[in-house]
Length: 353
Image (tube, rainbow, N blue to C red; front, top):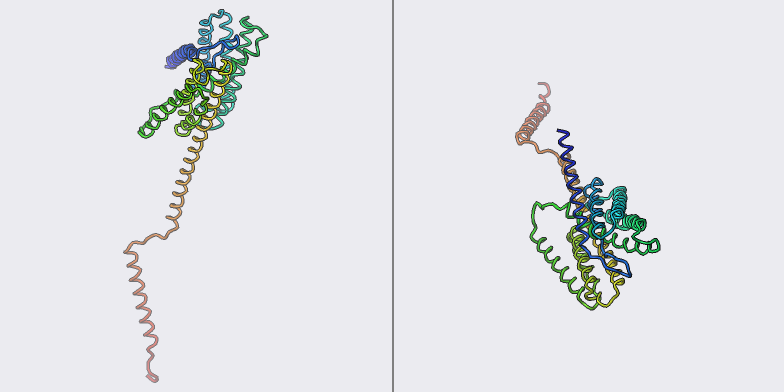
């Protein structure tokens, strides 16, 4: 029985590793890379977000899936096998470091506290991207695919791309993994969610096709999503805003039409980082407020029950009618006896009798 359970667990882990490798490899196609100043850059490297989400959701045992997926990606990009293996191991090492940092500070995949959001932003995205970019570019240079002179520029471009991947992709995948079928369906919430989706898409179509720079109009949309639908709304709204903005930048539409590609990259990265940070902080703060409200309601209910119990114990009990009738008769009999005794005592015989 025990041997069968161990074998079943190994099969499950093996399937998870293969699934992670496939998703990691497929995520490469999410955002095409562009050549900026002689360097090929992706505005958002989705595989990094996929790898970190896999480690957070399934644990460090699935790290071989990241190595396999990264190896497939590097081989597909035409890099030598030795360099592909080196880059794959370096990427997995960087993501494992980011995972351990998040676990060290008690990161929760529910992201229902502001501290979880800040941990993901600063440790998962900022520090994690720093470690991953450093190990990956170092392996890139050691493999002879890049010169040491260009280390700084390549590192910065990869760091931005890795960080955006964590900020956008990781929360969305964690929301999808934790999604459960609701016990009851509120039609008003469904209507509101549909309306919000339509509004976000329409607003982004307008701002990405307008010659005037109106990208700031995306902020109210993600605020609405974060406040009303918490982390799920924040993650999905940031995903939509990022995808449509990157598409417009790659196609040189609207405000990106007459700007250099390097400036467009900076604009896109800034917008994605701002909207993601705003949305997730608001969502976590709202969830914290909801939790505090529920705790207050529970404490108020407990206090009410305690007061009722004390009041019930201190209030005089109502006596049965038979007890009250018996006490009344007893008082009446006692009063008659006293009056008879008084009359007997007061009636003295006449003198000389």
